[in-house]
View 1 (cartoon, helix red, strand yellow):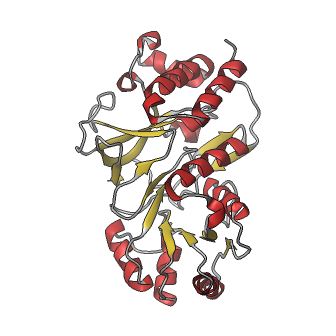
View 2 (cartoon, rainbow, N blue to C red):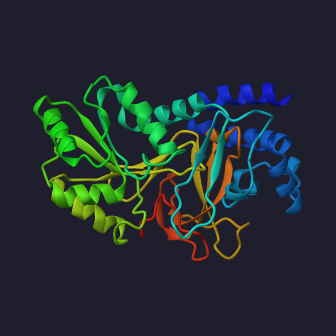
Length: 333
């Protein structure tokens, strides 16, 4: 089967994916990418992987995430519509680049995943507090937030950059009209808001996306969430786990555990032996399967440390010592 036909069939399977079919679909995506992604094909050959014999998720080799800094990763022959890039920090020389064949595929995945956790986007007033992301090009998070804002039926939805007074007025307006709101914010900006404009935010969801970007002291996520809960008089702080290299997201509703969206699965590998799986509940480096990365690479070995549990949930505990610190998820856990 040629690349386009295979890709089309897999897209349809991924859009209607059921959890029970995840492994079967992931194996189909693996064989598709080995065949049509020259970089991944070379990588498996260097590892002496007999790809035709791969029959389980544990046998799949994961491409190191650093490859996004050095290569234009594509499965198939297509011209990119957009390029997502990581924000990085001033200490970094290179940033990750994720080529996007079709932005609508990415946005459909974002919406499908969010609504599976939270219900219809249109029912929320979306308030996006994403300075630094808005001030550069190529942010996948900004594109997702823009799409959510456009889907919302409330005209109050929008970006607020550093306009904290206007943001607080919109929150008060939502509360007065009993409009459910989602405040989606980068961590350092939410911290600034908590210090400068503490207020009761009952009736809404506060969701941090990580990212201190060197603007504030690095503290644990639990410490940061406690600051937010006290400043905003709210019981729980939600979190989003995503990155430039992924088309899918995971969400936490405040208990410290992330749950992967449809099309996403997190596994753990031993830190000293990257080809060996780690046991459930034990600290390891995280491997990610993102089926929505169909056009690039779905099997990624990240630099994140964490624990994965049998129900599919996971914790993020930090980063490998030798890895670069990136703009996203810079909290110490």
